[in-house]
Length: 195
Image 1 (tube, rainbow, N blue to C red):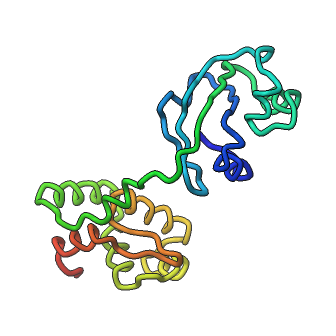
Image 2 (image 1 turned 120 degrees about the horizontal axis):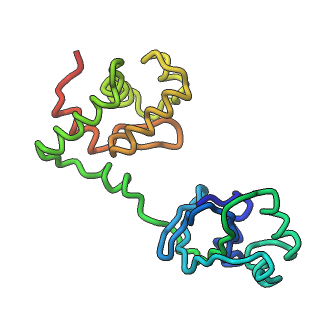
């Protein structure tokens, strides 16, 4: 569930605790936790189908609108589906499971085999995963734009691919550039030196 960036600070302060969405099927569930892309997360406390005439001025204010009229206008152009009133509370930062995974540097033979299989699937007909890992290992903290040409990729493609490696806990993002995580280093050690 996405929120516009300008709503994030009011959500953190507790000024916005409700959203009204038009969905064909519910996109949130009670107890579900959803990250704000600028940091922090919310937990949904209620999801109810609601008719437009059941919404109130109070709902509008809790959703960050100046008036009920403004709230109603926000979804008037969307057709189909039902209106859902979603109540939530800000819960702060959630631990990032990728970060925890990245720090685990003791790999079993099964884990190494699983990582190999996943990287092989990512490689497809054009192997790149190990090359990118070795490149980052040799160039910690170097910008993606400076690394991408070394593996024959455009910068955006390189960034996307590094995110795929990060999802396996093999790389970590730095303020500038990347590094191979402890998990990634353990895997590279198991793989042996590049040819």
